[in-house]
Every structure is written in C-alpha cells, then in structure tokens.
Image 1: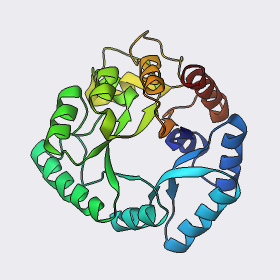
Image 2 (image 1 turned 180 degrees about the vertical axis):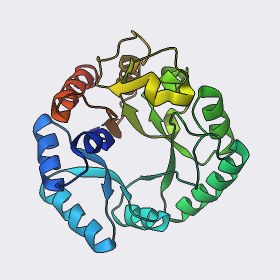
Image 3 (image 1 turned 45 degrees about the vertical axis):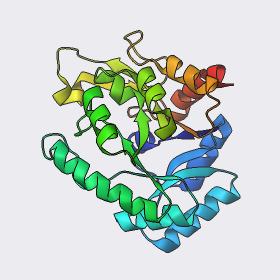
Image 4 (image 1 turned 90 degrees about the horizontal axis):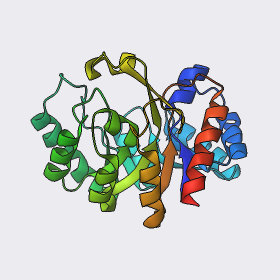
Length: 254
C-alpha cells in the first residue's frame, strides 16, 4: 500500500506548487510515499519532475498535462495504472447524464489502447454526485474504474462502505477526508458554503464520513494500491493536518 496526498488543498493554502522538491521533502518527513498527480506543461518538464520524484524516493499515481492526450501518453510512459476520467464538461447542470456516459465510453475505449484504467472521480457539483448517479454510471460504463472520494459521496448522502464493497474490483484509488458542516441549512447546490473538507477526525457530525469503516474494509481485503489523503481546506499549516490524517489511517491499516 502507498500513502499519498491529493494536494489540491495544499495548493489553495500556499497559493500554488512553487517548489516540488520542497513539497515532496515535507511529505516524506511526515511519512507519505508521494502525491497523486505529477503535473507538467510539456514533455521535458514531466521527465524532469519524474526524475525529482525518483531521486527523492517518492512516487506519483498518475499524470496531468495541459491536454487529455498528454495525460494518457505520459501516464502510460511512466508505467502508471490510471488516469482521471475527463470526458469533457462535468459541471452539474451544464451536461446531462446521457452525454456524460456517451463520452465516458469513448474515453475508456481510448484508455484501453494505452493499457490504462479510466477512473471516475465522484465529486459534489458534478454530474456524478450522489449514490444513484454513481451506481447508474458504473452500470452504464462497465469498463470505467472508480477513484472513490469518500467525503464527496458521504456528503451527498451516499453509502461509502457499501460502495467500496460493491465496486472493490474496480477501485483505482481512494480519496480520504472528513467533513465539517458549516451551515446545514444550505443545500448541496452551494456545497462550498455548506461544508468544508478537513483532516480525519476533524469532522463535526459523527459518522457522516465513515472513513474508519472504509479503512477497515481496505485492511481486511489486503488492499495494496494508493490511499490518498485530500484536505480541500486547510486552516492550519497543511503538514499538521496531513500528519493527523496519516496517523489515524495507519492506526487502522497497519
């Protein structure tokens, strides 16, 4: 098993990723094995960044470039397993389910040519937000894998443990986070005002995000892929929050 960080929240807190080596060194000291995505603007930059990872004894799960073709080519070239399934527009209300599924089938077919998995990342505010939508998508796109975000699914009323069990053989990686409800009178259409995602154990609604249950399932099944901690919002120095989450995860997984 590899412990990684989906570092979107770090970028928000710090204003961006200004020094890859510094970030990897910080995460390595905490005990992480890498970050989810190597991001680069051109092939030479992607190669140079991969060298940094390798030289520091760190790793990444997938790659993101400025174009979808580069995501596929670079991820394949670096021998990684999955890419994010990104078949065009995904914002809720701006694309319908039928269109998203049609495009996703085309995307997964292309990924097969590269021997890559196309992993759906369920997310609030997108066409695949709740349990019903996720189950429909997984049925209609049988070649798709799942990058399961337990926080987003739980906050949309989904069953994270049941989902993990049901689609375990299609899991590409798991995003771990907890949730703090800021104002439960606000609907999911304004989810960033309703809640913020936080470190494991930092949620204020017991049992809302059953991260312990998900970790226990992974332990029992001897899961050996990436476990990715993602805190969309940091109120403290990111390293502090991430250390808490990693310790809580390792207490269950090891």
